[in-house]
Amino acid sequence: MRGRFTLHLLLILLFANYGDSIAAVAGPSPRLLHRAEKNLTRVIVYDIFSPPAASRIYLYANVAAYETLAMQDKSYRTMQGQIPGFPDMKGLKSEKKVNYELAAVYAFFKTGGKLVFSEHLLIDSIRVILNDFREKDTLVYNNSLRLGQAVADSILTWSAKDNYAKTRTKRRYTYSKQKGKWTPTPPGFIDAVEPYWSQIRPVSLDSAGQFKPVPPPGYSTDTASVFMKEVREVYHVTQKLSKEEVLIASFWDCNPFYLNTQGHLNFATKKLSPGGHWISIAGQAAESKGKNWQETAAIYVLTSMALFDGFISCWDEKYRSQFIRPETVINAYIDEKWRPMLQTPPFPEYTSGHSVISAAAAVVLTYLLGEDFSFNDHTETDYGLPVRTFRSFNDAAAEAGISRLYGGIHYRSSITNGQHQGELVGRHLLSKIKVK
Image 1 (cartoon, rainbow, N blue to C red):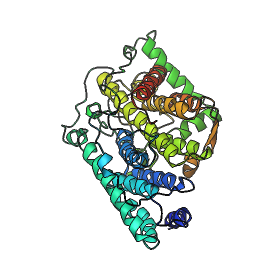
Image 2: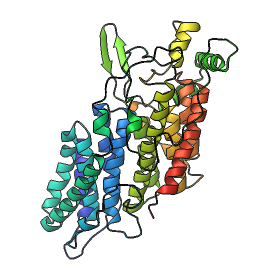
Image 3: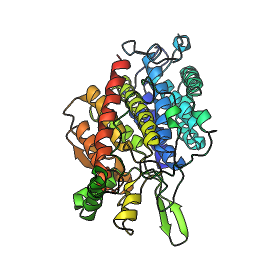
């Protein structure tokens, strides 16, 4: 109820001085858009979407909001003509009186709502806002909602062609029996997550394999091999973690599949996805600089695109190399009782997903907000963790990467090569997609 009351109050502040004598009025700040992002994140966490699937939801919801606001400000470019197959929405713009901010938030909710399982939770959030605004100006209210719905319908039609539905019908993933290949890990031994994600249509990439990284070190149980040296590094690093390293690993855990086991009782702890963490960072950064509606929407949409393409690129490599996780090797050849600090995610090791998408997001945010952008990250306070301060987005991305070594779930080469992979994805995105 507290969240709904906050949304209700925000709407009153946003539209208290709104009249029907002008075609469009900008709100004093995009706080309502930030609130919409947080509400969508809560539903994504509640529904336990995989990291790649969560990035898809963020993408389409943010594109809907951005495209609506771009209709109001001609200095911002539509994605039509920049992304192959993107719908032409010029005909959706109405000459009637419209509040584009309201329309954008409505388009965001209506798009995101159709992509999550618990749509009713989003409907409950937006209903309070819309019912209140209806009493203040019915004409503008109806015009704005019609525009928002039309944009959402167009984006959802476009999203339906990205092969997501086809990947839901694919045959169950078959594990390789070759040595060095990934197999499910304790405690849940969960089946492979999104093994066909490379078939999802990207935004800017020519193909999922466009930035294929170098192969992982050759699997070998020889103690002198490069691979076993990396395995031992994971083992030794996790044996003597400092308090700061434990905090870093926990702060960037972002594992929506975390499974608690107590005797015969198993239950999940719902956590933020890696993409959700970077969406939060994008919002905090935009808000700290007082960015307006259009600027904020541009920050969110480019960040979501970097995350989306980053996951496609990373998952393409994960199920190509199908590389074995440290936990499996260490238990077999070094210490059968060893467990990583973080719970091993249910998909192949190489490359590190957090490293890829963090680097990609950092490239975009650095381009939009600056190289030396110092910020405080409050994302994990909801999960009982303290605020962390970073000198730059690249600083945050580097810490996100090394957290996977501290957590015992990735080898160093997976992190390093994943970061390079993500940087290439981010730079390519900026070369292909322009918001202004």
